[in-house]
Image (tube, rainbow over the protein chains, first blue to last red):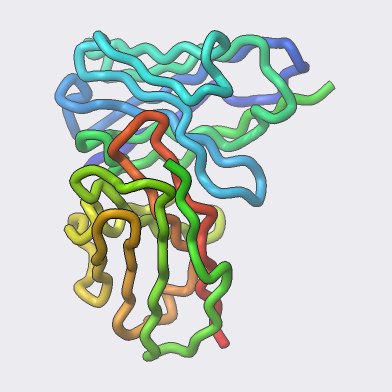
Length: 117
Length: 107
């Protein structure tokens, strides 16, 4: 069974940092692109970043470029999102998702990040 | 690519047909448009990719069509579990984008 489990969310002050993790089960992560997608309360999903199977390519939405870094550890079937310079508008549930190409076909249940003083 | 979904809300009864629209601000290469269903408190669930291909395990009452800039998700006969929010998504260019959603509510 394909399963993705996010962790690392929480409450952080504006300007702070947080590192999200995603553990994957039921498939070999090195075979797939991986994505982070977020959803602010009451809003639609917003794609954040993705990373190629071998980590050689990364893409980001403009609003997080220079602040967020996506990475992966295929040996541990894990995906990460390092977030710095956090802003109130980064408050959202963050989902990791498996990419079948660039389509996110399986999603985790998400981890909530709240940026507030 | 900006995606505009219409209508914002669709009020229908079980057994009725639902037709949801998604219009892109420019042509989507290879019709790389997907549709997701999201129920309250759950992650989005992939229904359709590349405009018309059903994802694994998706019932055949869900179908997608369209090309270029205009795409449609059709639910042929609404079941109680189909009342949810639906999002279209282009998976052609970075930044990948989602539409604003259509809520299908029970009349």
